[in-house]
Length: 218
Length: 310
Image 1 (cartoon, rainbow over the protein chains, first blue to last red):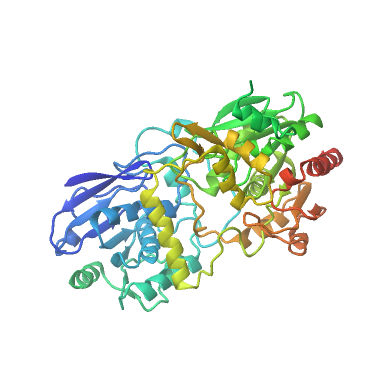
Image 2 (image 1 turned 120 degrees about the vertical axis):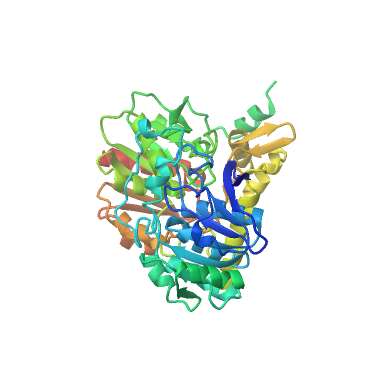
C-alpha cells in the first residue's frame, strides 16, 4: 500500500493506493467511523485499474480537525479532492461513503464513471426529514488526538438526508453522465434517500461483483 | 496627529468599539467575544449575520449599553477575530452560540438578538434552549419558503450543475488562496456592492475592524475558504413551523426595501408564521441592515420591548 497526502482546505487527506493497475481507477469510500482498508478487498480482485481508498476528514490517517462542523457536503469535497488527484474514477461507497458518493456523482457527473452503493455504517444519517432541533455536544474528555473524530460520529449520524435531495443529484447524473446505467445498488439497506434515488432509470440493482465487472468494461 | 484609522473611526461618531474583549473555547477552537456596558447590567446576546462580524454592532451595542444593558456579541467561527475552523455548518454555529451564552454565567434566562443569519440562529437557539432564552429579537432573519441568498431553480440541470461545480472548484483552490488585498477605501467600495445603502464612512469604518493590514494591502479577516454556496440538504420551509412554535416573547423587525443580502420576507409572509403575541415592525425606506440604517429607532423599539417583556 502506498499512501499520499492530499492538501485540501487546510487539511491533509490520506489517499491510499491499495493496488496498482492500468485501467480506470476505483475509489473506495468508507463508512462512518471507519478507515480505509490496508489491502485491496478481495471483491476488487478482478478490477483492472488501480484501487484507491480515501480516509475522510477526521477518519483514519487524515487530519483530525478541532471543533466539529461535519457535513456530507464537506466530505463530498474530500472525495472530489481525491478525484482531482487520480482522475475520473468508479466509486465504491459503503454506508456514509455511498451517500457521499452519490452527492459527488451528481456534482461531478463527468468525472465519475459509475457508482456502487454498498451497505455500511452511517447509511441513513439522521433520517429523511428534520426532527426536533438539538444541541450536539461531545464532552471535552472524549476529545483526544485519535481518529475517528467523535464530532464526526455524532454529526454525520444526525444530518438530514431528504429523498428529494438525493433525487436532485441522480437527475444530474441521468442528464449529464452519459451512462445508461450509472449507479449500482448492491446494498440490502434501503434508506429513504436511496429508495427515492432508485426511481431513476440510471440506478439499477446488482451484486457487487457484477457491478464492478460492468463498470470495469465501460 | 491622528492615524488614518482614527480619522476614519471619528467619521462615524455614533460608533464605539467594545468596552471588553475575551475569548471563549467552543470545543477546540476559540471565538472572540466583545461587550459594551457594565458587567453588572442584564445581558443581551447579539448574533451577527453571515459574512459580517461583531463589529457590525458597534452602533447598536453602545445604544443598548446606554439603555442599561450588557450587550454581548461574538465573531462566529471563521469570521472577524475568531479562529478559523476546518469545518463549518449551521449546527456548529448554533452550538457556538450556546457556548457563548453559557460563558455569560447568567442565572436568569437571557434575551437574544440576531440579524439575518444570526436571526435564524437565535430562533434555533430559543428552540433548543427555551429555558435559557427570555426573548428573541429578529432583525430581517425571518424565514420564508423561498430561502435566501443565491436562489436557483434546482430542477434546472445546467444551473444546478454550474452551482455544484463552482462550489467544488472553489474548495479545490481554497486553503491555498488569500482574500484579495486592496486599499482600505477599495475594500469598502467592494463591500458597497453587497451593502449599497450603507454610507462610505461606515463601510470604511467596518474595514478598520473586520479587515487587517498586510504588507500588500488590506484584506478581510474572514476565512477565505468560506463562500456562499449550495445550501445542501436544508430546506428553508423547515424553519417556519419551528419559528411559529417558539413561546418566548418575540420581536421581529424588517426593512421594506429588498436587498441582495436580505431575506425578503414581506410583512404579509411574516405575520402568519410569527409566534403568538409577537411584535412586528416593518421599517419604511429601510433595507436589510436595519440596525445600522435605523440604529436609534431599532434601539428604541428593542429597549421598549425588553422593558415590557422581561
